[in-house]
Amino acid sequence: MDLAITSKTFGSDKLDWMFTEHGAGSALSITLKGTGFTGTYADGNVPSGVPLAKITATGLYTLYDNVTAAAGDVLAGFLLTPQAVLGDDGATHDVGGALLLHGFIKEAKLPAYWAALGGTNIAAGKVDVGSRLVFV
Image 1 (tube, one colour):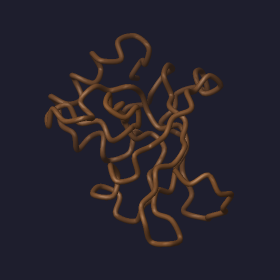
Image 2: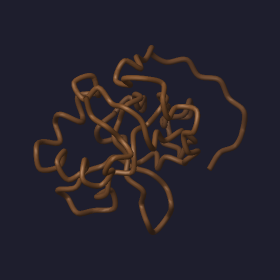
Image 3: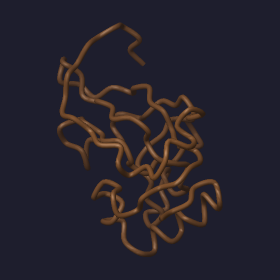
C-alpha cells in the first residue's frame, strides 16, 4: 500500500443513498483491493454506496457478489465515501476507505452496480447484514 500523501480530484458523488446520517460517524476504516474494482469501474473511481465484501485471506475489501462464490461473497456493508483506486502513475493501488456497517439505506438510490447484481445476490446480501442495515 502506498502511504505517500497525494491529491487527486475526480467527479462529484451523492450520498442520497443514505436515508439518514446514522452510522456514518462510526464507519469502519478499511483498505480496498484496487484490482477488485477495475473491471467494473475502469476509470478507477469507485462511488460511495457500492456494496463491499471482506476477502478473508487478505483482510482487504472488494465488490460484493454472492453468485460468483468468490472472495467477495458475503456483504459486509457499503462504501461510505468515493475512492480512486487508479493512481496518477496509471497503476491500480490498494487504498483506504470507510465502510458503513449500520444505518438506513435508500435502496433505489444505490449505484447501478447494486441493481445489476440481481435478485439472488441482493436477497443474500440483505440476509448477510441482518438488521445492521435497514433498506427503505
